[in-house]
Length: 416
Figure 1 (cartoon, helix red, strand yellow):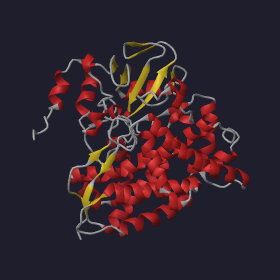
Figure 2 (cartoon, helix red, strand yellow):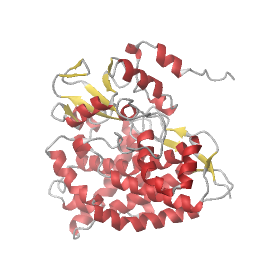
Figure 3 (cartoon, one colour):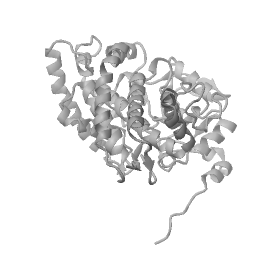
Figure 4 (cartoon, one colour):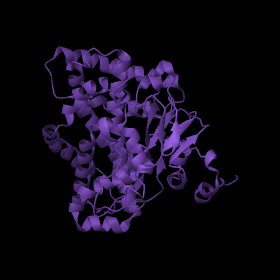
């Protein structure tokens, strides 16, 4: 059998003509070789046009300040699902689903306001004990001196339980939430859980049917403090058409699942790759507070967000035309040397660790960012109480996606 051809991506990124760059190629992210391509774009063509890709033509915005310009200018750069929404991939028109992240003001603001109370400081404080108790239980159940998949045993388990709590979803069926999240974000060409848009829709119809039953129940009950009750009683959300209801469900499921799950996995991976930082953390548990946002910056759980231009606009000396697809590459903005000092280094006691784009900015800034940070913080507080180290013992496997920056397998061993 012939050995696979190894590509020197540093050399290729340095020599490939810029008009041949297609940084939206999911293979770059699955193989974890995206860095040199974005580094060259930031240096030579920070606003870059790709004329031909599997996703059609698109603009890449790769520097921190330019991403911020697009992010805050929602009058020119639209998130509207009917124009293509928030990902580089255009869903077929018959399968497009509105959700508040893929809406523009004022409707965006009205719907987002309905679910905001779930992450109010008081509610986060109420959830802390539950998160800690579950984290302790999961960690105490892990084997010693035995290889296992951290993603499956810890990251997925903890985030799925959290999702079930946020929705007050039947706990015995909670694995459905992870399944629907994976189905919703899967690339149909990536060997994942589905291989066509029709199969995706068939699976998500099951999600809609299940939640519709719960929704009717919650509407008939007094208002409770869970996401589904909030949607069922909210002025702006209680009469949503089915596609919009499903769109918002998928947004909240993916938002509460993928980002936190992949940050939990990435934290173990990066601390192993940077042993001096792991040693710092073991010596000073107080560094968890700055380590958490550093992991979220360095990994960047969602690689990009996309907008559609509503009008002609000049950005970085380039003329973007009305109707053009504009991709804000958070993974690149988080490595921008002009905005972040030594951005390619993983430094858990970084002076300004929250200066990153992983949660977005402006009106679409991630609703659950503080909850995600709290889950990661509690996880590491409990890890450091129990284990001297968690060792990564083999290569990780990553998702075939240029949107979800995901890890599916992380083989680890806890010395006992």
